[in-house]
Length: 240
Length: 208
Image (tube, rainbow over all chains, first blue to last red; front, side):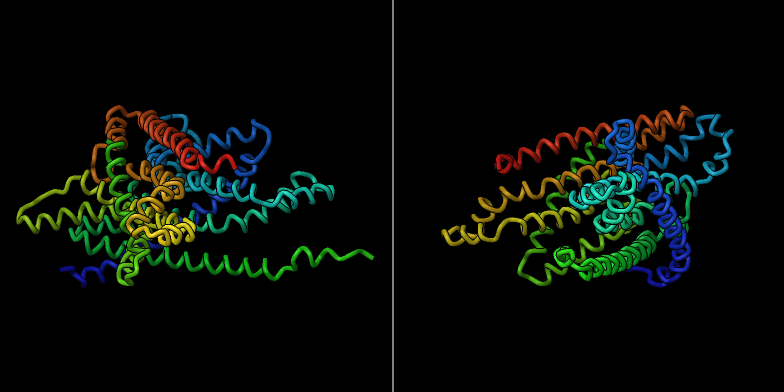
């Protein structure tokens, strides 16, 4: 049935691909978060000048397939001569940076929406209390809404991390040698699709399950911290 | 073609989801275990790998069976892959929806002498819809976008046609952007319809 020997032989090559997959995922998540923070702030702002561009951005990136976004960046940017003259061109010419850019822009839209939900879920009373203490809106956002929102957002953001790991496989369509890319090359050489793709699938599965474990541990850790903090009623001691 | 692939996968995916949810909630341990393995494995592997595995794997299997070279068509492999992926996520949604129906209602129906099948058809199923709709709606949006992945195995759906045109005209940005706008149109229309359907499904609860 399955050629087990071939499956073992494919593992070292696929592990090389795993490194690329991890690189793509981590870089995209970091850049995506950097972009998502201002986006979420804009999205929850009151002025239409601020929230409308953020809304448009989020709708576009969530409403179109990631693969189309990748092609748009990788193939599309070459259509314009003026882009070729900018200092960014050496980066945009490389499939690697195109993939990172597409993944980051994409995950930023989803992350911004997750953060928006979390920011709006922060209890109104806490924000009012901070405002009553004379803090400016920006200070309240930075010191109250955002830290609270991070904890509230964690379960949904964990799902997003898993999705980014899985969608990084699309990088193989623009010649990158991540797990999927390596697997496709190996299949082209050996013509043993079951063996190779099953091993590749197993690698992703292990990666995803390990990430799920870590996320669950982080969530438990944060929950313990929350439980250990004194309940609000304990603080309400009469003064003097 | 994009819409056709998505619609067929939706029908099969919902069916698989029902079966999967039934298995997860069943009394038999083996069935539950099988369903758990199915949802964990499928949800933990990229959709692209599943499509590639079924497409290239299917070709190898059929060739071996037939004794001569047979190529699986991208349509069949694509629909099959998207259906089992949709089914895995739908299983979880239907399971959650069944569990969301208050236990007292099924117990009351049983106490009134309804047979289990009758309880399912008249009490559980009509309400299942309301609880499952938001989740299934999201999955439909994901499915529409995932259908673009089938272009990788050569099926001439929206993205594949775009790629061909973009190559021929040397205006990749124009055509990929147009394709993006078409997908965006599908998803925006879908989410508007879904929003309306959700409100309709919950119409008995709105007045409260």
